[in-house]
Image 1 (cartoon, helix red, strand yellow):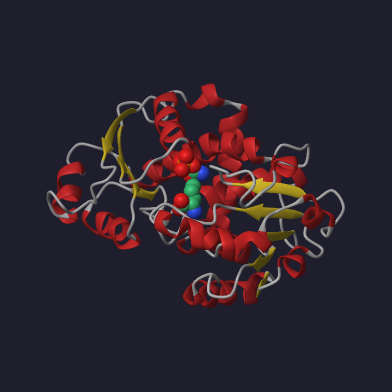
Image 2 (cartoon, protein in one colour; image 1 turned 30 degrees about the vertical axis):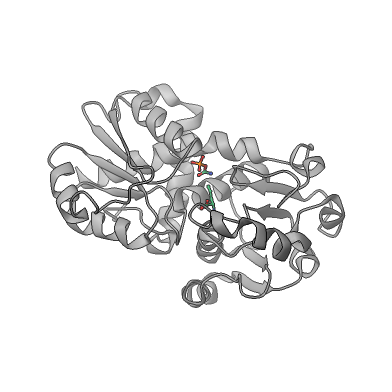
Length: 309
Ligand code: CP
Ligand code: NVA
């Protein structure tokens, strides 16, 4: 990979994305072949927000490849408060080979990357969740085959960080993404602009509508995420009212293509963004997505360290 960091899927080429997928598949099939891949390396995990999947899978993934991890718990304290983000990067780069950061502000990840010679991986910011988006399309390749050109995914709910990463990846891979969200909760206009630029080259289709039934028409997978992301908890009640028509129900799933899959990055709130009889049914692949966080992030760490040796 030519990249030093993984900040946003928009920074990747489609070839790099496919390389991540093939490496993840190989890592998943042959984990022992990589047991020394990061021998002697150290990984810093900096989290301003809570996490189950990202924290566990980066920690285990690095350990399984021979690296050691240091976890920096900043929950409740934003980076840059005790010392500048720049100074933090300039310290960490002297000790570690990879920095994984989950931050409120996307600018914080960019600043860490700008000042650290060690690769920085965005473990979720308010703007994007690239490791999640890459994992999700990798999971789809396992379900429907390696070429996702023309595959139609509908994202229903908040036009948030996860949604942005799914849009960027669809654009690079030539997939079709239709986003259904309430007025005022659409994905960022700049994301759509950048993604549509790629879409013109790859044949991807990107549409945003304000009716969930329009979004899922013809979809082969329906994806949703929480209505109030981390950092927006104060809006939970207000959003519950605004978003309730966007709940993924059996009725909504019936309006899709036959045999459509259900996807969610988790954590999920049954009865809010998705009904239990959808997420807990046989069409749901949410635990495959969660498992694949491990393999995909191992591939990302492996490829970034290799490229920066
Ligand atoms: N999907 C995801 O990133 O989960 P965590 O917030 O638990 O890491
Ligand atoms: N959009 C969610 C994703 C959680 C993995 C959030 O930012 O809280």
